[in-house]
Length: 309
Figure 1 (cartoon, rainbow, N blue to C red):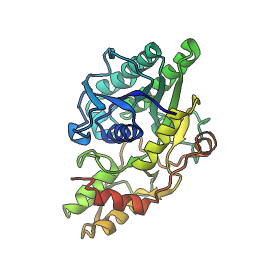
Figure 2 (figure 1 turned 135 degrees about the horizontal axis):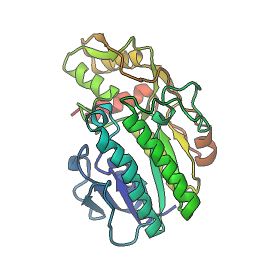
Figure 3 (figure 1 turned 180 degrees about the horizontal axis):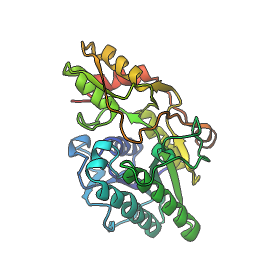
Figure 4 (figure 1 turned 90 degrees about the vertical axis):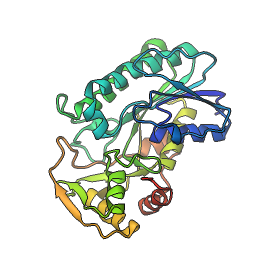
């Protein structure tokens, strides 16, 4: 589907900047909305006249002029380091920010894709996780500020769809990695790369047997735009069903960087999910999407593109 003008909230962040870039390559005019609390202008092209930047906090109403036919709502701190540092701000972004993005889409008559997360499944009792699974989330734990903000955002999106007929879709994004992640982002992949390149021990929480399913950002962006092009409400899981342990990821990054670093085990994180793997049957059937980049190749690409530089 051809979109004339898109709004990307959180467009200067890790994922948002890749989405902006992909839309520009399609010929779409893009408005990047960001308050730069975790994003950076350095992530965005500075020579494309089709890209506009609006410095805004999505927790406040989004008053944008002109026609808009697509909204991609990605704004929200996604790293535990960020959302644990600003729990109330994260709840405001996930709640009010989603409300304002939905109101913008409703006013403009635009398709909106709302980015949710695999964290809505919590520490899952179902494996792999299907979209029909309601989750196992601690609503008052330290991670709840992010988990519950996203769950509320899904409820709000569904309410707009039912009450207003808003053309809305929800995607549940599983662990994503790639270039433009901040060295001190706090998430596993950039942390391991930073530590390995500095010759420091790679800090693995707990025994490292907890699993994750890592999707390269290029694959994830394809999935997001496929959801934008579709007319499905979702939710739809977007992630890589290749499941690996955290300890295995640490050893792969040591090998890719040629580091002499060792692994150091530290205290487990509170409410850290033990297993995480998406069932992507719906994404395959509804969107014709599945990831194509194997983990080792994706990690090498990230290293070559200066993921932590």
